[in-house]
Image 1 (cartoon, rainbow, N blue to C red):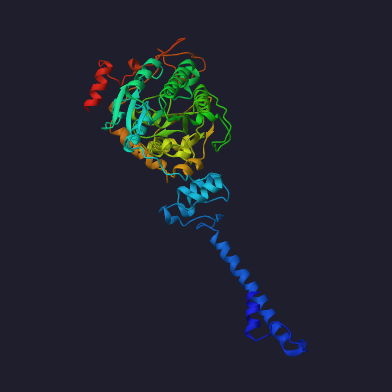
Image 2 (image 1 turned 90 degrees about the vertical axis):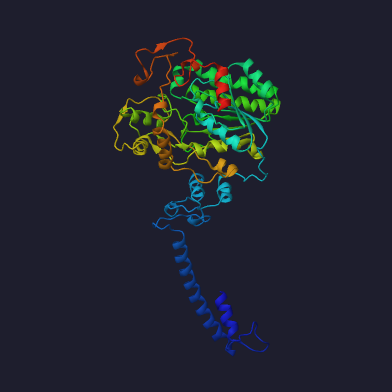
Length: 495
């Protein structure tokens, strides 16, 4: 239409017919020529635009990307970004596209229904915080991340399964021995070292499958112990209680799991985590104490206890390879999990209370891409320098078949950037493990509360059944039993 009008005007055609003159004045011929050229130009323009759209909405491999908000892959220098696909309106695929730098944070957040936080990040400098489970895996990294943010950290552990070498040796980190099930010890710690601005509670016995056979122990440690800590935090006016829940709190919904997915935990461990989430919300309602809940899943990396035979499949595989035993998988190995490297998890937990809009929210945290256990076994054996290591499939046990979550919410609030790919994370973990293989000794239960229906590979000849079990520092073969609690703390302070 534009070409037609311009051509008509170029020929000097009047915009209206002068009085007393008809259409035989040559205007009709001009209009005819203009109409023909206009129609032809319109058809040509349509063809060009169609071809251009078709080309621009195809990836380099010829597959449609259908993404009107995609950026060039060079933004994050991703070598694989050009070949990835993005689904319009797909909350999960847009998260991957964001990680690869092909869509912006704002576009990903808008598509997922989240707002980018507008309030400035609170400084961690000078904040006094309490971190439980700090001789363990995730908590030791969280304690270090808090210290690096300028916080003054009191790090605690009961040493029932941790390693003193995991506790960060930094000027602004103080270690104390503490059992979170002991309310009097907790009260004494808060009185002597508090008040705390933030409490990071990560101490737990995190074994989903084993929790069926140690129900009372599970609830005493993971639920009752947490409640004792919540009570102390309320009494001493803690501003924010940061809690690491678990993807196990969801149960077995259809993947991908979002924060809005209904919670139906299927094992005592998941039930205890969900119960704490509900308790924190009730405490917020009555006492006004803010919380931040993180739901990590299948976290791995340095400081992991690879000698624990009941949990952490990557650690189990690496331990089996070190000892020349076949890697074992319950079932056919087609069950899928997304494995999260520790550096993609711990810094976000540490930063949780520093983002005002993150308070009183729940976040899935971890990797996006799922892997089958069969594929994981292949990658682990390669990382450990033992490709084609023997793999044995055991009888299937009761467990979730596919546990995969999406993380658009945490990426909108925290903007963490790209995650560590599984092969690179496994390489880093294997290097750490191979450098200290002599330090790992099995940490096993001498008794369980129920032996019925336990996987045969977990049942030892000397394993007994008991109505009440405890697992303390006295049962930890990695802990120097000749040292008193005071000696342990003094040695840490000297280091």
